[in-house]
Image 1: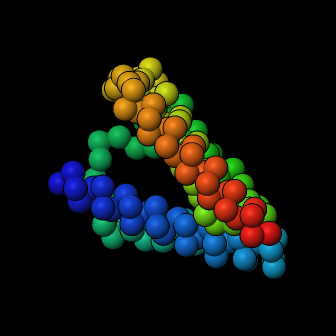
Image 2: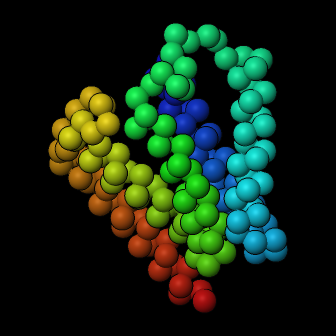
Length: 149
C-alpha cells in the first residue's frame, strides 16, 4: 500500500507540473486572476461531483472540526497565483522545483516539531542531505536555464 501511495503522489506531482505549464500559458493570455478563478471553479465543480457520488459518510462535518483546520483551504490560492506568475518568468521546471523545495523544507519543520497535531519525526542528517540535494538541483536547473538565455 505504501508503494501505491508513493506512486499516486508522484502522479499527482506530475499533474501539478502539467497544470502549472498550462496555467502559465493561460495566465499570460487572459490574466493571472482569471486563470486562478478558472482553476478553482472547475476544481470546485469536479470535487462537488466526487463528493456527491463517491464520498462515504463521516461523523464530523466542516462545521464540527476545529476552525484552524479550515484555513488550509486558503493556502491553495497563493500557490496557484504564484505558480501562474512564476512559470511565465522562470519556467515550469525552476518554479516546480522551487515549490518542492519549499514544501520539503516546511514539511520537515512540521514533522520535526509535530506542528498542526502531526506526529513528530525528528530531523536527522539523512533528511538534511535531502534538502541540500534538492537545493543543489534547484541551483543546477536554474543555472542551466540562465546559461542558454
